[in-house]
Image 1 (cartoon, helix red, strand yellow):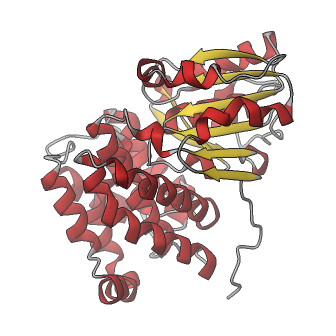
Image 2 (cartoon, rainbow, N blue to C red):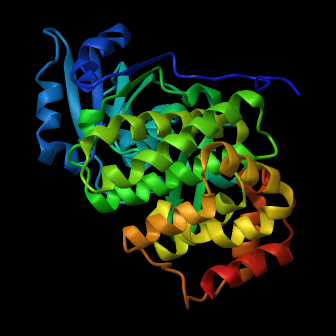
Amino acid sequence: MSLLPSTLLLPQQTVAKPGAALGLTQAAAAFGANGLLVYGRSLQCSGMLDAILGETPSGMSVRAWCHAGDEPTVGATDDLRAELRHNRPDWVAAVGGGSVIDLAKAAAGLADAPEKTAFYQTNNAAIPPAALPLIAAPTTAGTGSEATVVAVLTDPARNLKQSLRHPSYMPKLVLLDPNLLKSCPAATVAAAGLDAFVQAFESYTSRHATPFTRALSELALVRIARALLPLYQGNSEAAADMLESSYLAGVALSHARLGVIHGLAHPLGARFHVAHGLVCASCLPACLAYNRPAIQRDLDDLKARHGLDVEAQVAAWLSAMTLENPFAGKTVDDRDAFIRETLASGSTAANPRPVTADDVSALLNAIVA
């Protein structure tokens, strides 16, 4: 087995230090004098938006665009694309959680594309190269979107949650600033951290994993296991560990893909509008039991070398954070469509154990039991 993925795609530059976000506009000058900064409301409420814009160099113009909230939709992406075409910037920056980064990533990538965003989700259409360079500064430690070529979007009209991906979607500059996590609500810390942990685990056991990606996934797993609960409980000293671990998990999953947990999580999230990390955590026990014949050696190895019992760790977090399975007792009315979406997912295709329609149905039964 090759040590490296066949193609290695990384952000052009990553700066990881407290205060890194305050240098965003100065660093962006390398891409041009006109920019658009996409942000979430929490950035404005914390005062960080004004602090970042206050460092804008003389002669540079930066407009700000507020993401309305919730998961990014194809409609919101089309709105942002229209803004990019109307007032063409030299670069786009995303300072926010995974939703903000995915929205900006998709809009910057498709700024000049001829069709609406929804067309590129489901028509197997060739996605054109990104039209504008992207800068990403995450304010949550979760999706790792700042280190991937993927933008996950929902289409409420079709109950669809699906990703767009292109090699050129990789951000040119990533700023990992633990100070940006200071105003992150505890519920967001929990959901984002669970997502990061499950992503690290699934990329570790993916059938496409390489020694390179497994090393990153393993490091992320161990660090998140140590840092998530302290950060949730208000210990800001854990922020850097969580932020960097989420980034490493993003690099790993971008090359190794994930597994059936994420294959199930997207259609579940689209239908029930539950925080993605909690969806993943709720799917983990059933999916881990299903995959155990294929990954028992990995589970034993993690426990022997790091004292990490993956299932027990997630259960302990859910108890400590008083989070319950939001799908218990729920019914998926369009089960056949749900199964098709799960089987069509690239994450499901990367699962360490092959997955059939009957397997998806059984997993769904276990999740909603």
